[in-house]
Image (tube, rainbow, N blue to C red):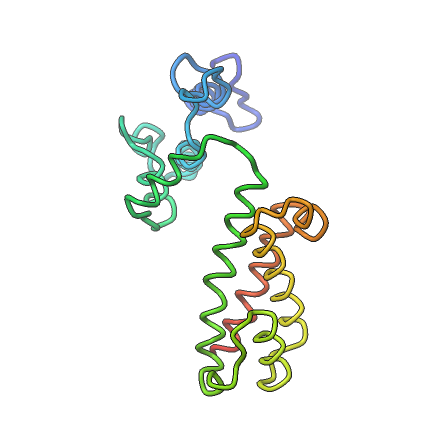
Length: 200
């Protein structure tokens, strides 16, 4: 690790050692041949955040490192304030694939499921006349309630992505889905911000 430390780049020996161990070590490491001996992304993120915090005069690497036996839930709670339920941890633990597209699809389903009730609340005074189907309801909100045109377009994109994910429609996902996680994230952020503005 001492050979990796670059004084000019601000890499002290303990930080270089921690990054080296995170990448390639005998125990848990990102590059370990065994999938079971690779840390979860939240665990790796916790280590990196602890390094950053130590470099900025906060907690040191040793103080912020995950305790033995900590799982992704504990790491996520420390880094984001979010504490997943035992069921969430159980279901996440069932994932055997590192398929990025499957994670994006899961997130699009969750985003759509989370955002639509917020709009139902915004337009609650017109709920009796609102159609049941999502496509029709979005169009109704636009036509009858003043839903902004750009938000309508974005909601339809999110609806199409969620439908393709829900129905495991790989052809439609490839054709109409987001091209990257970044594109999906930008759309969700824009929709969330626009709905927040409507909520006042």
